[in-house]
Every structure is written in structure tokens, then in C-alpha cells.
Amino acid sequence: MCYDVCPMRVVEKSQLMSATEIDRTLQRVAHEIVERSGGTSNLILIGIRRRGVPLSKRIAHAMREIDGVEVPVGTLDITLYRDDLSTVATQPVLQSSDIPVSTDGKDLILIDDVLYTGRTVRAAMNALFDLGRPRSVRLCVLIDRGHRELPIEASFIGRMVQTSDNEIIEVRLREVDNEERVMLVERVE
Amino acid sequence: MSFAAAAANPMQASQRSSAEGETKQRLRVLDRFRHMLSIEPLTAEQITFILDQAAPFQEIQRHPLKKLATLRGKTVALAFFEASTRTRISFGTAASRLGADTMNLQAESSSLKKGESLLDTVHTLDAMKPDCIAMRHSSSGAADFVARHLQIPVINAGDGTHEHPTQALLDALTVRDRTGKLDGLKVTILGDILHSRVARSNIHLLTKLGCEITLCGPAMWVPRELEQIASAGRIRRVSRIENALEGADVVMTLRVQQERLNEPSLPADEYILLYQLTPERLKLAKPGALVLHPGPMIRGLEIDPAVADGEQSCVLEQVTNGIAIRMALLFLLIGTGGESVQTSPADAQAMGATEAKRESMHAAD
Image (cartoon, rainbow over all chains, first blue to last red):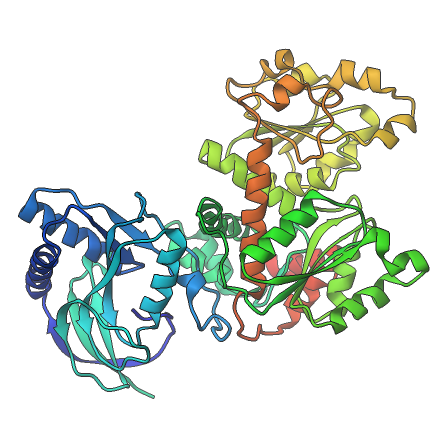
């Protein structure tokens, strides 16, 4: 996930995933989660704002098709747990976190669009542990683009993409962006 | 209160008219807050933004673990030159739940008693390097005055009979949570309006957000001038409590200061007879009308205990919401570290109500 929506000039380099590919990938990821969790009974899906939220809902939908079970879905706003607040210049807008059921003893699947430095996930884990004591927390991302700054890895990965520091992965989802694709863009000076 | 990139932003006028708004509104109110001195210079959008930002903090009050590390390493100075219990505890709790430390200055032990000037006292506090000051003072305009002399954000926790902005914000949040909206609500404020900074802040806030205000109390406490303090036509004065309550969605009772009851010729018995909010009188308001009181409440004087403890009473929700609002403000003021831009209109806005008003009038042109 990208922390800041800062205005900068970018050029689109290529499309990494189409709408169909995103859909297929999420189906596969949903199957993987169900398979490796031995069912869905103890799971809670938690989407990190913003784009993790629609992704978590879609994965929950796919799981219902697989297992016929409604998996609880929560959303997490990690702004208050960011480690870079002392340096951000624009006022961040807080949103509510909403986790409908107790997380105590549950197996949580944290869901986000892009895994990059790992700092968002670190913040999300701190937020989760203020809410209760889950039995386990695993991470699911649509894109893993490398360049980790913390010892954090995803358990479920839609696609691995090799990127350079200047490149940005833009995940556009119809619920948020009115279009559906994953783009590789590059920052230009 | 003022914003760094202040009212003169040319984007504002065009965006105000755009109805599709949320994102655009958000962008505009994202300008960094510098102080929270009064409700009067704020726009409806800015107020709504603050109320929205309180929601995540309301939720944190319900967590098993209520402490964040968001403001770890920051210090909030609580400078209460006038006695206060709930507001001071509320600010202190808000700061500590965000992970900040507090410095406490209290009227009783203050060196003001020994003759030190307000300015010397706050300069001394400032030299201990707090990141923000929440202050209460018995003189109207004291917070504006201090904001003009310090580089750090100042939150007005009540200044004389002028304003108590955080109380108005928490009241609005409480009402909005229960009713789902503020626009179009009929709000009746009962009691000593003239001397009440709570009433004044509430009148400004509620009229900006589209409420209709009815003021009611002994004539000497509800002078005609009060009708003029906010947008025309939104405020009316009614002398009989029965008429004032008719059709009200919200009833705000104010504390009657005992010392004021003795000064002119108004015995407490007469106040109770004419203005106490009783269950019978409350029935004249809309069914389920909300009852608010900023505290401390004097049961049996301005409010009947049955009303204070009744289902329509929001008194304890107000207290809980007070922490959420103060957390939201502390986060807005000192939560992020980027240097705020020192534009001249912003500085002007920090300089007292009248100058700020003049400035914003120019900006509106």
C-alpha cells in the first residue's frame, strides 16, 4: 500500500494485470487460503484501507462459493499506527476501523493490494493487537513488489513483480477507481 | 481557530458550490490546523471534518486496549488558570490515550497567585518545550492572546464568557450520533446564556450547521444582542420555557452559577419554578428529544434528577465523546510533523477574534 497520495508526475509503463486476471488471481488466492486453513471456520478477513477493503470482500465472496460459508470481513485504518507521521506534510484523513467480531483466538488474514516496504503491515499488526489476541495472523497481497525494509513476508501472493525504486505499482479497482487493472508506472522528475 | 493555508485560498469558493463534494471538500479541509481558539471563524465544512475525524477515536474508547503510540514523545501542556475538573481530566486522558505526556499547571498552585503575569507564565511553560497548550482562563480572549505569543498550537479550553470550542464540538458529535444529522434540528438552550461560553460556542457551531436555536432564560441572561451573534434569522429568544421547548429536537441546559443567582433579584426558588427542566416540561419537546448538559450538573436546580437520569439524557455520552473530540484535535494539531506553512492570513487568524473576523470577511469578498 502506498502511504501518501502525493502529487507527482508518472508515466505508465505497462499493464501487469487485466480485470480478468485480477479476478482469476483472487479466485486462486481464495482457494489457497481455504486449503491451507483447513476450511474457513476460524477465519476473519481484514482489509487494510483503502484497496485492501474491496479485495477482502471479493475474497470473502469467492470463499462463499467454495465453502458455502460466510467468512467475517473487517476493515482496518492504520493511519494512527504509521511510523512516518512525524514527517508527513499533508494532514492524513482518519477513517474508522470496523471489525465486527472478536479477534481473540481467531486466524486472521490481513489483506492489502501491494506489499512493498512492509511498514504498512507492521502498522496493521500493531493495530490488530490493540483489538485482541488472535491465534494467528497471515498476510495476503495481490502484488508483492519486493524492496522490504522489515522482516515481513506474505503467506498468500497474487503475483510477484520485480520493480525498481522509481517504479510504482498502481492497483486500480472498480469499487475505488472506477476501473479495473494493475499498472506499472514510473516516477519522472 | 485557524488553518495554515487560510481562507484566502481561491479554490474555496468554487469548491463550496460543487455538490459532488466529499473528496473535494476533504482536500480543502486537509490544510493543516494551527490552533483551536474558537468556533466562530470556522466553516461548516471544517467543523464537519473535525466531527468526522473523531469517529475513529470514539471507537478506540471501546477497545480493550485504549492506548495508542501515535503521539509518543510529544507533550501537551494543560494550563488551567481557572479551576476545572472534567475538562482538564478529559484533555489529560485524550493526550495519554494518544501516547503523549502532559504537564499540569493548576490555578491553585499557580505562580499567578504570586503575581506573575499570564504572559510570563506561558513563556515559562513554553520554555519547557511542550508541543501544544490546552488552556483555560477567566478572561475572554486569553487563548487568542497566548496564541499570538507562542509558536506552538493553542487549544482554548474555555476563555471567560467567550468560547469553549471543544465543548461545542463534543455536543455536536453527541447529537449527530443520536439523530444522524444536525441540519434542520431545533435546539433550545436554557439558562444563563449571557455568561455561558458553552452556549456561545454552541450557537456559532449549530447555526453554521443549519440548526435553529431558541434561547430561553431570565431576561437579564438572554439579552437581545444574542440574536445577532450568528447568522440572522436562526436565533430567537423566548421568555416562557413552555414555548421555548415546544417542538424542540434537542434541549441544552446550562449550569446555573450559584453566585450569579444572588447578585440580581433572582432567588433560586424562582429560577426552579420558571426554568427548571422537569419531565412534564420535557414532554412539550418532540418525543425522544435529546437532553444535554455540559456539567457540572446541579440536580434540582436547572435540571430535575428524573430528566438528568432519563433515557433522553446524553450527559454521560457527552463526557465520553469529549475525549474523542480532544484526541481528534490533538492529532490534527500535533499528530503530523510537517512544518505548517506560515501564510499571512493564517497568522492574522490567530490574532484574536476581531482581526480574524475582518480577515475572513476580506477573504469572502
